[in-house]
Length: 454
Image (cartoon, rainbow, N blue to C red):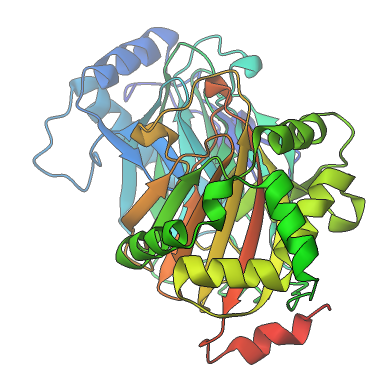
């Protein structure tokens, strides 16, 4: 590898058709196929650490350069020599000036692993690179490097190019404010292996900017209805135990102690059947909710909801439901925002991606309806809804979206939520009606209430 003849770097580089500058470097004339296979075999004998959070799930080696005590096979040492040699070629090609630092490690994506939409803008990263070691990788296996277009707010809009991880090739691109990309979920039985990292610079090579802050909208104040209509609705559609004052007191005690409670069987079976017929039909006009650097799931405009689901949404706006949830939580509310969501393979919401609730005290209610091909359990992998201490990455509690359950959460200003990536290989899917009630003691509620819709 390090004894290869001199080569013309520019002749081996191709600029790809993408929204930002992405380049493919054909390494076959420098690194032989045999050397590439030996490098892959050597890498797979190294120690990997599983990494998992709201943004990713994959295994990674220690940094080859920043870990001085790391024992590296000779094949890895030879590749690092090659990497240092082409560093200057890439700097010249892009008109960049790098410092001496290189970050480089091996990433291994096994079945179900992924890296969601992000832009690499961290510290002094200047140019990202990925060297692929996946022989005859098929695009239908996933694991592609997906590149996003951006909207006028510099948020990820849609995937416009899928780059297959071609064996013995390198992708590199400058880190900029709009370089959104992801590693699609590996749906195969084979490991997707790469060496990846960054060349660094002394000054920031990307522009700082802030995304606009959005508020919940619309917000509904309590709708007054007659007590007789309330009683009729409860008697017909809701399990009788939720009308029991002692039961509500027990719910409130647990909620105040734990900050959340999952209640089973809120709706009677007859109502669940009615709702399921419409929720799981193909007649609903689902639309993607983004931006994709924050979240991806489907939702329906409340004006387009079928009658049974619209009934639930309207019920959640009533003064009786405001009172019901006050009795279950000990909190008082000013208004509510409601959204009907559909989640399945490929959907996610990263921490901080729940626009409109950041910085406010919110009482969140989730009504789950789940039908899926794969079984969902209480195992960590199926705890899709994760609530954590803000800015700490420390989970407070997590929940699984089980069929006909109601989750009540004290989503205060010190709590972040992320919805764990729903893996395609798991076959999980659910629909949820989400109601975010604004807590009355919120000092900044006047900002939210500008969006009130009576």
